[in-house]
Image 1: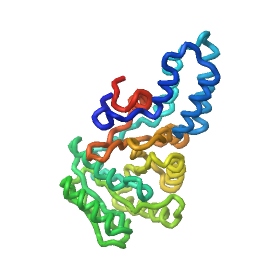
Image 2: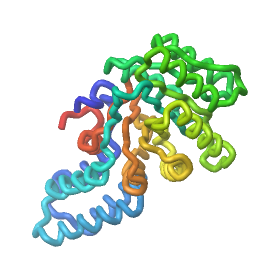
Image 3: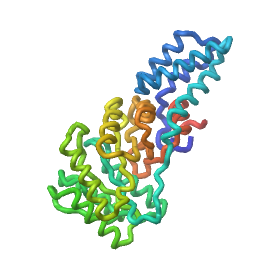
Image 4: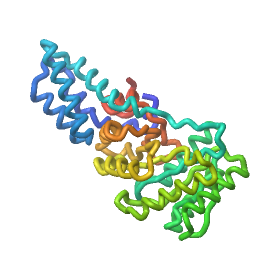
Length: 306
């Protein structure tokens, strides 16, 4: 399929085992359904979503004598897709708002700064004029990393010295963005664990301070999640959402994990829109999320036509 083909031609989908299990089967029995259940749970789809799916599949098996394996596979795909449909909401930049402020949050190691660069590149391709705010003032290396990306992408970076007040940096960046007629300001913040209450309070302060420049800001609070950590990413999504009100999620490192099923649990339990997925290390490897394409890739193998 077009979304993934270029990047992950050799990688099988996380549910390819289910496709192989059902292939050529003329009868569907309890043992096969138990195997499907195990595969879904192993991929971190989540207990509630898996229970719902297995219940529906059982009903389908009971309605058909003999059950059709192809039909069962299609029903399984549809059920998974339905779990994601409500969260398939692309990021839409409102051109009447300048700057459109995107506040990025997440834990250390989630790929936040790299995702900021990929997002900037993606928006530049849409014709948007971008600025960065180096709001991660905890680490001098974080400021330097963002400045390197800024130079590479020809994006101006508003920064202060390490240890400066993050909210102040982002406020100054908003003022600069307004003066320069910037379309989108992407603000970095320090990586923090969802359990670090004092750092979560700092995020709340950043959110409050942005409103002093524009009462409608921030216009997007984007949580960057590492898909490879499984259930812990669901915990992070809930905690960050409770603390600051996440409006969109970008899932990174989906190309390197067998735990990509966590996306279904996140969608079901948080209802937060999934804006993008990251499936590679190149600057182009950030893609708007599409439920139908994602589910197809999970079954047919990344890069196969559907």
